[in-house]
Image 1: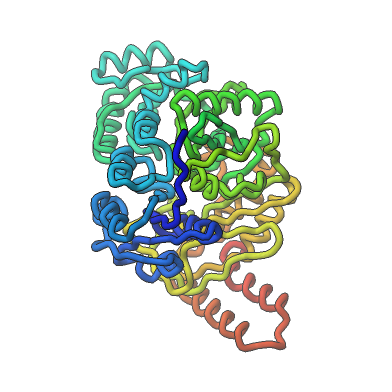
Image 2: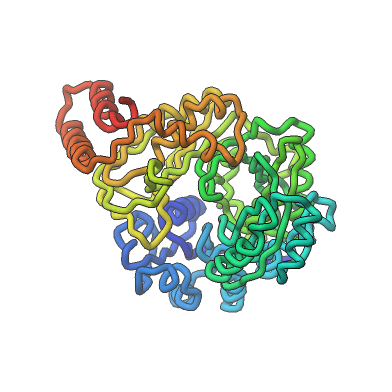
Length: 505
């Protein structure tokens, strides 16, 4: 029997919107939160919201949010009982999880051994295959020699993917169409994998054309109970990273959903999983699915699951870490309505989604029924070059998919951000896309649809116009604050006329 722990004080080893989101649940549970912040993050909302905040010397991630020794030292000095890693940074670092536990602090996540096992893509493939979970045809071990890589590629048939054994996010990945490309791609993938993950091992698998990316949210306690909270579709991506997600997926029939959810639960059981995790699959055009990987952490897109299932996933993570049993039974978990999430990044969608930096001059977030904004930035904050370019996650819920699409379109139109380029125009394009409305899309949506789609938008990157838009938005904000006799609808209409002019010409 596991001892129950009352985790009264929890350090969030992260930053931005996810740190703020976690700390809100911590406060609702009657607990204290502790934040850590780098030199460039001192003015961000998450550092002010926490009950206690401690500085990290430096700006670079390696000196701050990846500095395991410093974070654990702060945690001990602050007298915290647990550390929640959020996502990214150290959230899937088995060494960090072990270091936390060795310090007598609870790690809000799976066991270090599980993180290490599922973080190794080749070992994870072998493990879940042993439970009958389908895996993409390919190597069961990392490949070292060109001759071995050539043999495997010939067996499964070109095109093939070379993938990093120790990581994800598109790093260390190369698509190879014919034997003549194999040697150079193998060398490049190894080099990038070594740089990104400190591990140059790679493996080869069959490339699935026009796949859809489907993932299942898992919760597991310390007593062997595992449940799923249904699927999310994450097929709209750039650089192998997600931009738009929705639940439920229109691609799944009821029987296929049941089959894939069972495979996801089996994958979690295979590694003795505990806490929240996500089992990811790729779905082929013939409705065949294959295990892709398991993310042993909270996912960026968890809000849309919370909106449709009505479960606070962070709350469940903390309860499981305290040793409590899952109070959720699979047959009593229901999903209601449809939810969509758009990730709002500071990126130039007209310039190959290149990250943008600068000061947020004006920000006004959308609101209203069924609208949720997870944000860690305010007007006046600066977006630096040191960390991820995410500004916020915009999620909406409605009773059906068409209603959710309409609500997201309205919310995107109401979203005002001046000072940096954002992914808002791309997300608006997705909501207007006939293929998206029909649910007929794959992970190739950006490369197939966006080149022509962006030409339908007014690509106006002229600096004078951008400055004029910023000044106009500032003037409108001041006018709204001091004018009681101007109707709100007129103000909103005036806002859109200025700030969305470049997309509506």
